[in-house]
Length: 187
Image (cartoon, rainbow, N blue to C red):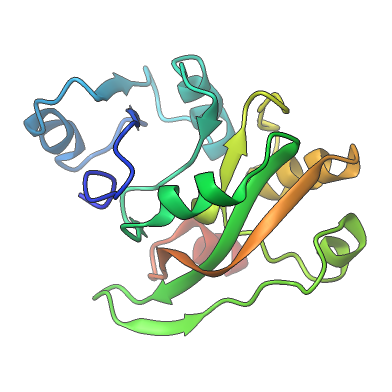
């Protein structure tokens, strides 16, 4: 719903069903909208492999990610497309971390500098707040990583001296819950 609520409307959804056990397929197909393309993996894949599977179906110049339990704020794409320049590899912003019931826990902060050293000292990129410029970078996730393949991706992009920009306002809501991959891995 949060993608359909965007103030910017020239987008498409590449919906990857990674062998879900809930009603994801029925929900996705209920939109009956040509902008939503539904694909299902043959078996449950690790996160990086599932994201790489979806990359095969991309047609546009920009790429954003949204997991089914998270939310984009309605002006996310508008803000990002206005902020990103032709020579920026990606743009990102802060996120609001919410609990299982959608209540705000806290808002993340952005580093003062947009450089590799700052990200090494304090990694502040949330995958769901990013918009990647596919005219600048090629996206491929390391499938050997069981946790945070996005960290490796963005650090690799930045280490190759690509420019990026941050927006100091929230662009998404990131849900924290007991069954999340993050909590399972940390535990």
